[in-house]
Image (cartoon, rainbow, N blue to C red; front, side, top):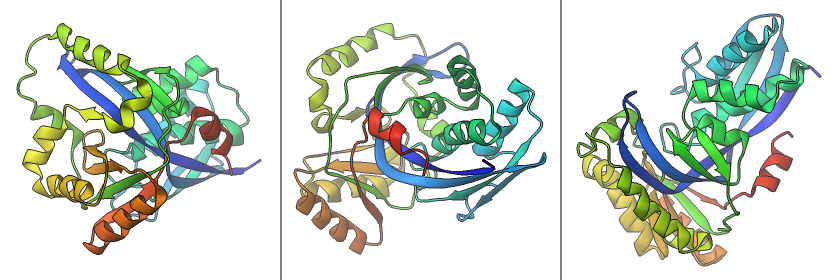
Length: 293
């Protein structure tokens, strides 16, 4: 096998609690990740040695700063591999949209390269490489519904959350994660007791998360980007039972009661010039069984 085609799924965050700033400069998080049905498509082809990136979205870098490029380079170094790869990315996940597109691309690059290079890295080896690439990358080696702690890189599977009628909306605003976290000026000291509200809310019932999703970053990002606040307002006006920003923004997801309501919302918000896409939660089993086409 010299090439593979891989689906690179997006994620949302059912909950994102930012506890405190750590000594290493990162923030201590408690989050619940969820893979959703929106995906990029990666075509990965083995080469004699070079690593090449091509993408149909000009905003995505094609040099060594691309996360998929970094993934290929780190995996090759970690396992002493000599082959290279050409990675072609068909982009559908909004760039810098809080849906983990770049992180997902990196994780799928690791899995795709393992196949075409005919190598068998252990799960710990893959996770070690993924952790070096970014906080969300290890989650995409797992999929489904999962708890993320630390920077988000330490992930544990949870009971699956079902959510069949979701609408993802992006106003075309790219949000820097670093900027979003920097705006949380209250986080200057250790605040370990903030884990208690997270635990209490999670304990109320994981299956209620679609209607109780929360995000500590939302207030500061919406204050800086009123277009995203308008997206949330319009989603609720369109009949969403709940709407919240995903990750560090700027995509907002709305939860609807049925397919017809979500489609009406898509048409209404899309008519305003915003990117709007229906989606649903993807379980771990479905995620793993549909990655390779």
